Image (cartoon, rainbow, N blue to C red; front, side):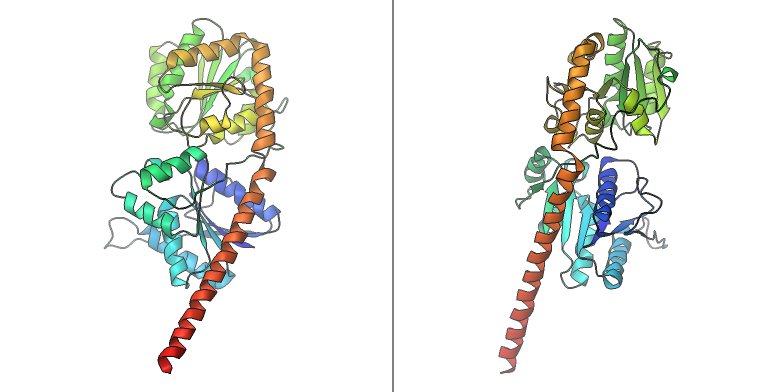
Length: 393
């Protein structure tokens, strides 16, 4: 198949999943075309059967803001004509699925548009009164809709009012790639041998509740030795650094900023923290589990579909910093429990979320949707032909 994937190029779960999905599809023999404003950061330098189309950012004095949806629609329409794409897969409802819908209609109803809801396009952007009607319309006009968790599918119904079928297809991971490696980096750069490493990776947005992480770590550090390693950057970082200084934890907390060698870091971590306000899936938690780390976080969104409480980690109500601290402390003190949960997480990642279990679900959805859409287009064409003949007679 010839598949078009529309995505955001930067750090974030939707861009990572969309890129790795496309790469995996290309490795399985499909021709994959990526559409974005810049090259996705997870896209390899060169891979057979993958193509990248940069969407132009066109400035014009009349517009205060670049009409990205329109330029994306035109780019997609041109790609249809040039490459005869079979399917368009939009990651994020707006503007990607909206642009795909416009391009499809310009092309007479083909190729079909499949929209994957990732989270904030439904829970944040989609919930805003300025965007909610467009999100609902875009989903209704998509030929198929998927969500990355059952919880997000529920929110799509309740928050957006979309009552069509939502196919739940989980995010995935290549457990042959995401596995705990030995001697990939010097662990003693981050902590001494007797200090467990508590790890968090994110874009440091307020939803990630970085202050809760630091407060919980301070509680743990009052009882045992440990190090907190924070990876990533974003709007909450400066306040987090201030909080660390105020608590006198400068020597115990490491801010590493944005990093590309995440498997190296996941291989030396001992406990992974993810106490977010919202997690539609929790891809970073899955990556940690695949690299044999128990996860401690808040019981929200789709995270309980990934992390099994008391089996692969611990989940607490949002804001329960005492519970968070107690679970971290328990894992720091009990190495056997930590190992047991780490192994359980690795098994779950391999058995449930392995890339080879998930990609065929997308392939089947693509084929089923394409065949159904082609049949509908043929039926409409036949109906128009009959109507035309009737009118002439």
